[in-house]
Length: 108
Image 1 (tube, one colour):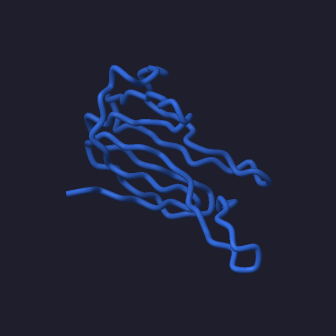
Image 2 (cartoon, helix red, strand yellow):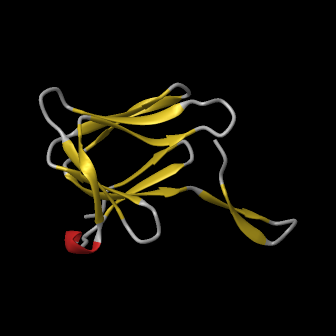
């Protein structure tokens, strides 16, 4: 079963990955996954009280989250969502522009 979460312009998907190919960013209790381009609002991941999670980065610059316990993602304009324990890749929501016939990143 694949867990997929959408939070504003972010897509967070569970993945199976070899951690030895990732750059270790650190063990965190909170981490900003993305920041709004115009408002400065943040998608903030926080671990359950007394726990932490590991943050990695892949070759494409995407964040990889290793959640041993549940966590919550908050944002000033979106509902809070709970991430279950798993490994996740954080990506950007994409949209198709029919006028230019191109795909572009959604801007939050």
